[in-house]
Amino acid sequence: MTLTSVSFSDDQADAYDAIAAMLRGAGIDLVDGMVLPAPEGKNQIRAIMGKAGSGKTLLLAELYKALEATGIEVVSGDYESRRRKEKRTLAILAPTNKAASVLRMRGVPATTIHRILYTPVYDPEYERIAEWLMGNDERPELEELSDEALERAKASYELHKSVPAALAAAGLRGSDFITGWKRREDPLDIGFIDEASMLDDRQFDDLRDIFPNLVLFGDPAQLAPVNQSGTMVFDKLADVQKTELKRIHRQDADNPILDLAHALADPQLSFEDFERMVEDTARKDDRVVWGQRVEVDLMARSPVLVWRNATRIRLINAFRSVYGAPETELLEGEPLICDGIELPLKHRKKRLDLEARGLIKGAQVVYLGPGRKPGFSRLHVMGAEDPQVSAASIVKIEKPDEEEPFIPYAARMGATFLHGAAVTIHKAQGSQWEEVQVFAPDLYAAARMGRAEAGQPLWKRLAYVAITRASGRLYWVVRNRLSRPSQGLSVDDLRGAPAAALTLEQETDLI
Image 1 (cartoon, rainbow, N blue to C red):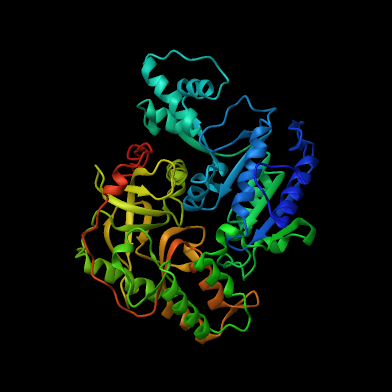
Image 2: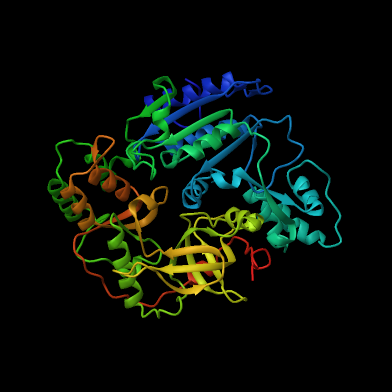
């Protein structure tokens, strides 16, 4: 077995060695730290699969540390040196901002797939600073920045390894140093993809075009991407390309949330039996709550997870009602979900700018108030490295039994949003919250319908995904009732976010 700084289980050791062997074939030896030029015309794909608690994230983190120790350059998507042509590279990616932020909290420099597909174009003056920060050039002398500002940039870069964060620490805004975005033209080298069960065929093809060495980390027990007919990218791989982690590790063995998730694998388990199991667990452990109502205080930061769209709409309108939100405007602190970008083709550059800053479909956002221009919103993008943005916004709030959504706040074009107080379990994949509420009557409805996906009852897949979104406490809500809020909505916890504010008003002014 290849030696690492942690003690692996047998299945983790096998998976580590399988990836190490793959990398040796690509000219990278993790044992002696030898790195050779990339071989021509050799493409390799491997998948590490396992359920929640099986150690996929730990394995990914240890592989990252071993590769970093060889001197390989980690590509973050925020800046790429032009001087790296002969250097081997690694990019660690996730489908969503929230999934990438989970990895970053564990010390792994992850970014979104979108940030690798599109690369920033830097102003030449500030590119000199970036090259200096990365150790590729001498310290620049710029009239616009003092020595003190450059020192702040250097200290920030040494801490975060982020060029935009470093330049922001020097007092610059994104629009000062990033002039645009372009589709990636040159391939990279090694790609680690977390939450790979969320990938659709198009994303998978894009990644294969970019990375000759691709490692997928994912959970085959989750829900398949929408419009994939119940299949995942793992199904495209041969058995020899896949390694499965089956052991649940000691640090997770006493976790009642994971115990419930793994109990769903029992083919004899009925929905009624499972609910009794949840209720029994709630009596013994306060990390599982048998909820008689939806707790509205939690909905502003972690949405209620539902199956049916009609349930989602009812809960959203109930949330707005108990907070006294008027139809004509949003309250500060209301949660939103990005539903895409509505821009004509001639505004492609503005679309790339918005998406690159985190406003991709499915991104979770908190409304901070109106922007300086009509139709603009100030937003906090949950999980983004630079979360504070201001963008032209179209907010749609769906109403029960009405085909057309109500639009309380809208620009003529820009980023579109749905309300985020409740979301479907499908849309919640890749995210994790400290506390999660699961609306059990929806899962009971799925169980009554008898639907299946990939040979397993749909309600079990839904329950598994919903339960494993909770990292600290799971609320299993069994009644269609909503509590009253203990206080008004607030954004105080977001205003102190350490990331730099990147205003998009200049870039996205479409009026």
